[in-house]
Image (cartoon, rainbow, N blue to C red):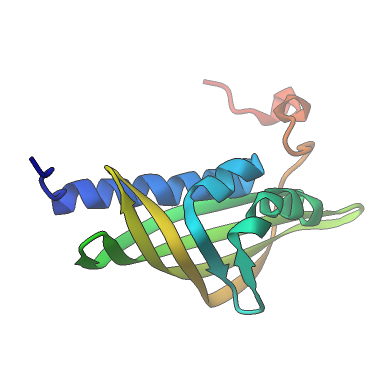
Length: 164
């Protein structure tokens, strides 16, 4: 007997899971986890280049080499079309990129972006076939991160932690 097609709610949950797994792996690795959310032949299309699945295990390490920390916040998502096992959707994201500058103020480069996603169903899960990044705008902010050395939270001064 053929399995029933997933409901829209199940598809939305699977979409959320794969997008959050992508964000977590981008921020913290390992690279294999980043690549694992993509189908064979998958790719990320940025405004400057295409990152193939074979290149993806290096992405989290490249981010760590460039920034002191990153945080990708998955915001709203919309499934736009389901065609058999193919799913098209859009994910809004706020991507924070923290940089330390010695005696100068720390900065956070913030990208407000959307991913145009093409996915394929893999059982109850979705895998990305393509994620096209569309940067709507960027902001550079002063970042207050006293005593924080990413990712070791033990360096946060005790007096900077609010009492409960």
